[in-house]
Image (cartoon, rainbow, N blue to C red; front, side, top):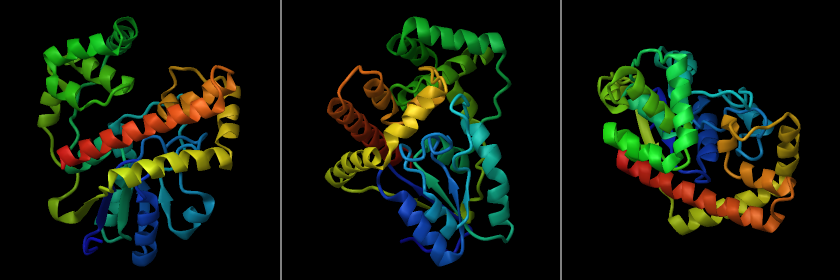
Length: 285
């Protein structure tokens, strides 16, 4: 465990690595609060499938930015940072210490390296970027982006339509790459204000934990919350569809695949995602 003599504790790592439990233990020992830095735990409809802290855990320490977004809502790293700033300012100005915990690397990047002040994107440009993704497909749009912004293309994870289209729309709007904009940034956190702790568990242990957690999610009622979400009119384009296991649960509920096949596929995708997260954090920090 790192020394907690600074007001901010940044706790990052891949999915299923035990971040939430470690954050809660820290908060109870220090009297601190916990701030969510997991883009999927922002959504309100799927607490089980996103492994959001339950009511008992939330009662043991203050928790912020959990479960408040509608399934259609799309938050950027900038949206998250603006919501996080009041909690960060409180910790920096003498309030209780704050643990910022999650697996969304761009949120941690915004804190440590800063966030670019990119000009507003016109509605027609934003629509054109998303149309390009729809018409070209991910592979071809990546090739286009790579010619103008190879750094962004390399760090955007597979199947991340939102961030791929975002990098493309910035280039369309400004004629400059997102990477160039991001190079002109100021760190959000003073260098001496935080401790950074990145969990890097053994890969076999992590994969087994990913598999076991998905089985447990089904036992705890994940299918019921997905069924309720489908009843709201769930669309494939909604940002909440990036939640691990959601697409496979929908496929099962629609009769497109048996439950054991859906679970196996979701487990494989989760392991792949955990591997990419581990690699990303290792390379970034």
